[in-house]
Image (cartoon, rainbow, N blue to C red):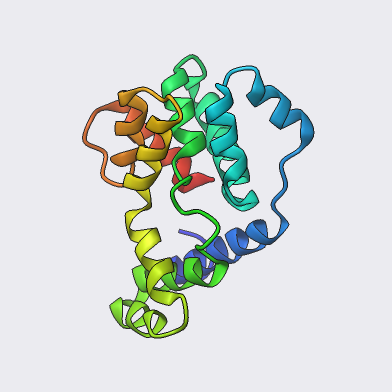
Amino acid sequence: MSRGGPAIAWWRGKIGRFRGHLRSTVRPEEREELAGWLTPAQLALFEAMPVADRRHGLDVVAALRTAGHGNDRELLLAGLLHDAGKGPRVRLWHRVAWSLTERYGAWIAASARRLPGGREGLERLAHHADRSAELARAAGASERTAALIRHRAAPQDGPALEALRLADEGS
């Protein structure tokens, strides 16, 4: 347990992610590397994602490679595109409200839904896994990749799903 207990550790993690979200960038060499293994449609889907989601996807891919999954192209693609369904309408405040709801209860989401754009943003977050899987399939990803994206939050199918879940939570 970290100094200060689990609540402090949770807040430290969330503050770190908040800062990371604000500072997110994708370097040109990272984009060039992706162009070597993505189809044009998959690269276009990646580039349509908000920069923070692109950075997160790249970090998930790096974590998967570090964990020994570098040869599983379908898993890497799932890691890269698993948040594509959030889109630009999911703002930082929606993400904060979502995290606070998970930690402190549904009353936060109920309050956030009353704000302009709140309902739409939270609905997108709630259903982004299915939407991300649909977008990935439309961009030419395999059914396995789509299934990994769709079920990331509740692993049902072996080590690849667990690896994706762990890489996502750690990035």
